[in-house]
Length: 462
Image (cartoon, rainbow, N blue to C red; front, side, top):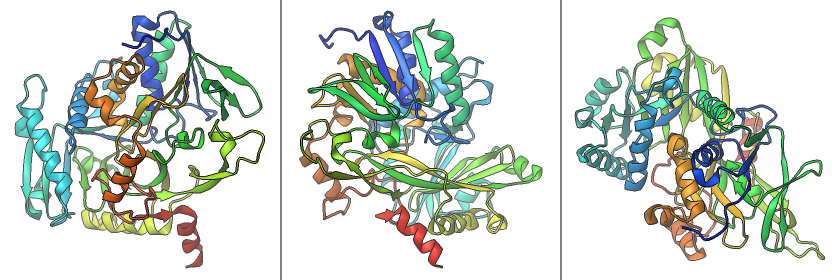
């Protein structure tokens, strides 16, 4: 347990999964009964339509190659399955039609480790994981039978009908309502509050300054800004904003009825996946290395240690670019994946496309720890495209980390990694130049090292 006094004024930067879950956990923890909490978000409306936590649906699975994430996701699933109105899975926020993971031949290391972990979970008492709902799929005929689709992607895999998906935007809205109803006036939520910079006094973080000059001061600042986090504080290569792509197409009532209860299907070798449709809209997406959008930012903005009497220079940071269509490269990849599973829909027009911005870390592990150089600044970021499913439980872990009571195993994997650790992880991913260009957690696929503007320019030149 930390000996530091309990912060009476707490500022949470970001109204996404990590930020809102933290607020809910603070409200339920008696230690913080006297604390006042302010949640700010740059978006004028909440849920933030540009956030990675807001979408038609997000996969909820315990299917991980890493056992700690598999166990934590299994804990979260217990809460997702609670369908009471006020619970996480209530009012149609959670569905459990299953998850089918496939892989191409000789590209299945992550898949097989994941299968081993979910089988271990099924053997543990109290996990409520039904082993009869987990089965290995040998060959394309077995894959077809498990998915219900005529087409097939991948050569082998497994099905886990203990997994499902959640209505992401509805869950964020649910969390916002809960905070407002449970706060008893202790929480202020401020949309449209765009941070210009963090405010420091020496090595101590005192809060933020908004665009326009207003300062919001706090005894503890929790940076939970997702893909925008690296543009607010210099994380020194530990986090990277990467743009991931998705597309939507309209389907008929008959197609909705036929596909609505089918499992999510993901080819781990290519990163592409299809989630069961809802509201006559089908989503296809890619969980890949993504696009970077490098922007030069003054070191003085994101690094308080930069000299104030000299030109601090610039640092290149990948910054989310929202409200634009996906590049042609991504559209072609999604069309190819759609053609494999649903060839009858391969040429149907996309009604909309979106670039979803992850906050990736080199290993895919979250960054949940105090900043080592700046007091009173806590980092709750690095969701790496798989944080949403932990919505019901991640706040408790973040608060435990703030208090110094987080389980040692989780504290170890969510730590501020040393420069040597970073270099080793990046090298294992094949980036011999030492530059962090993509997450190497074993679940990513597709092209690597893509820059968004370059891909958009290629599209224009065709």
